[in-house]
Amino acid sequence: MRNELIRYILSFLGGGGVAALGNWIHASWTARRQREAAWLQEQIRSLYGPLSFFTTQNEQLFRLCGNIDAAYSAFFNRGWSQDERTQKTLRKEADSTIALQNAYAEQAAENSQRAMAVLEANWHLVDPEDADVLSQFQVDHIRFTIEVKEQRAREIPIEIAHALGPIAYMGPDMVDCIRTAVRRKRARLAGVYCEQIPS
Image (tube, rainbow, N blue to C red; front, side):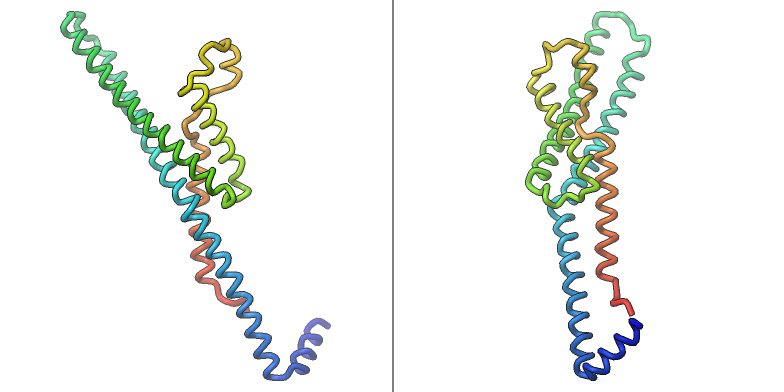
């Protein structure tokens, strides 16, 4: 019945009408694809791309801090001489190693601050499926600022501090979320450019 109706309408319109209808469908389809491509490009350029830069860098910085920590333990837990001069040198080297690790951790915290600024400016570009993970990152960042940097949790009972749970500069969920989203968007963008009008 439906096919007969379509044939009837097409025969009524004639050749010129069919061409006009075809052009209108093609133009509508093309405009929709262009809007989708523009949206995906804006998401990648303004939100997911910058977040990918910071999350990927932080992932590497956390790994570097872990390597320093492991090397620190392996080196300084040896059976060193208790000689005062040796101990003084070891304390100086230990302090320098800790300072280096802290410098990398501070860079990760700065990256998190910059990622927070990207989110604040471009929250309207967040996909709904990513909102929970990105919201948790924001809460972790706020907690880090208030409880660690500003040290406002110094005098609260230890039981309350434990109840609040650990604070992450940028948890693995955030890194995985952004990595997955960027891949998803790039694949979709490539698909938009390669799609043909269905026959």
